[in-house]
Image (cartoon, rainbow, N blue to C red; front, side):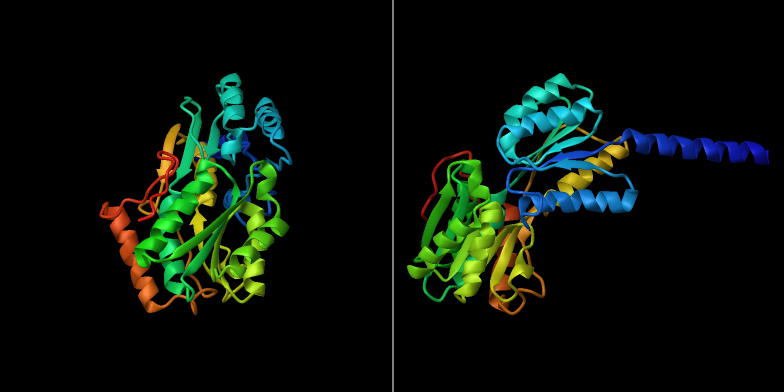
Length: 331
């Protein structure tokens, strides 16, 4: 009897080991670098958490151009990696091809959606997180002027800006919002010098809070704001720590959770395809609060944030989505 029990335990251990061996996770980041302290790095942090908790290693790749994504996705799939995560809307068309070629491989697309049986799509309501940040920016501003520096000029980044502007006007109908986009190619995500120049121009025009939604380019925005003793708003990851006392808040997108959950679900046999859209209600987006920005957030501001979040979740406030209607209401 004892021998039978031991045999069962051994078989169970072997089965668990085999399951783990079947999981070969991989990530293809967006352009801008793994350690952009923003979007890509959030994905990396989710993968690292999974690795630390399970001991299962993963592979990743940092494309430097818009043609490398498809090559990397196909390379990982052909070598048996599963699941494979595409961390950017830029890889949507590439993934559409590769996922069809490898129907038994599980894929995840972040920031866009594909209706394929082996693809999980994860999108975010960036407009909702930006709405909350806009309220904070308008309340913190002493000049009545705030700024926005976007990365690549695409509807997704306009979605950030529009939500930010709507929130700011909810707090102060007379607020002036200055905005610039860094460029029209993928290099716009990795140009902190240009980001700093655009931020300085807005500051020179009177903006005293500047929101950066530009990947690694935003690091130049945050640095310039700090150098000029102005406030900034970070994006995607919690960037409050980069310049404590200068970053008012960060509009976080929980890309880390999307990666962690995809790896975990694949490991546990619970992976499902379909589209997930995460907003304030799902804690997929939000305004980061911690010790680094504690001195900047007044009780009135915190109360306004809590009310705005509750109103958006209840449906009392509708935050405009630029990607479904390419306009940005001014009131």
